[in-house]
Image (cartoon, rainbow, N blue to C red; front, side, top):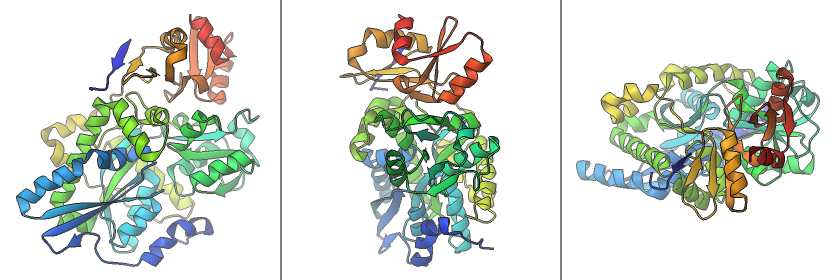
Length: 458
C-alpha cells in the first residue's frame, strides 16, 4: 500500500443542432476579444467550470492565479499590463460562438466540440487552433451511459425502442452512437434520442421520461454518487481515446504569441499541481463548482479516470480524426482538416527538448484508492482485494473508495461497482454488462453484493 499525500461547403444543419449553433449566426464577426489601448490588454478565457477535465485550463488554473502570474512576467518583458477576463460556460458551443465572433481568445472543451470549433472557425473565416490537451482517457471512459437505480436494462440490446437522453454534438453522444452501432442498433432509428443539455437529461432520467442518459464528466459520476443513477455502459469498453483540449483564435495567437506561451506555461504548472496535490486540487475544484469533492476525485484524482497532460499525443490526434465521420453523419459539421487545426509549436516550445519523451508517456497511478474522512491524502492499493480489506477495517471512516474495472480499467466508486467472486479473486466492474460478460466466460464466477465482497475480503 502506498499513500498519495497532499504535498505531492457549409453542411445542412438539422433542427437538433440548430439550438447549439444559433449563437454563431447571431454573433457575427464582432471586435477582437483582446481589449485595451495597446499598453493595457485584457485576455478573455472561456472555460467550463463543471466540465472538470478542463480544470487545468479553467477552474483550477483560475483559483491558483498562475496565468495572471505568467502575464505579469510577460508584461515586464514587453511593457504592457495584462488582465484576464474569465468567462464560465456550461458547454463548449457558446465558447465557440464567442471565439468565432472574436470575443473569446482562449477556450477549453471536449474533443467533439473542438472539431465543431475548428469547422465553424474555418467556415466563418475566423480560424482556431488546438494548442494543448487538458485531461484524457485512452479508452474513452470520460463518457458513460447511466440508467436509474434498479433498472431492468442490462445490455445495449435492451435500449431498442427506449428513450435515451444525450447532448448532440458532444463526445458523450459520440459514445452513444458508437456503442449502439457496435450492438447492431441504428443510432437514429433504433432508439428515441432526446437532445438535451446534461442537467435537463438528468431530470428526465429521474422523472422517467428518459430510460437512459449518455453524458460526459462529471454527470455520470455525480448521479451515481447521489444514488440517482447506476452505470449502464462504460465508455472505456469502446477502446477509443477521449480528451479535452485548449483552442486559441489563430489571429490572437499570431498577434500575441507571448500570451499563448504564458497560458500554456500556466496550464503546465496547474497540471503539476493536480499531479502533486490531487486531494487539495479536488477540494479546490469542489469549492468552486459545488460538486462533491469525492466526485471530482473520481475523475481528477491521482488514479482518476482522466490523465492530465498538456502534450498533443498522436493517439489523441488519431482519435480526433475518427470523430469527424460521426459528426458529419449527424450533419453537425462538414470536412475538418485535423492536421491544420492542430498547432503543437507552443506546447513544444514550453517543454523544449523534453517534449519527445513527454508526448510518449502515458503513465498513470493505480486507480484503487481509499480516501478517509479527515485526511488530506489517499491510500493506494495494488489490487481490489487489498482495498476491500482496508475498507472493512476502516468502514466507519471511509469517505470514498475507488476501484478499476477488471476488464476496461475504468475507475468507479467501490460501493457502486458490480462485484464478481471468481475462485479466490474479487473483481470489480463498472457495469452489470461487463460483469455478466466475465461470469459468462468464467464458469464458477458469480456476482455478489458489495457487503458480501467486503466480508469475503477479510
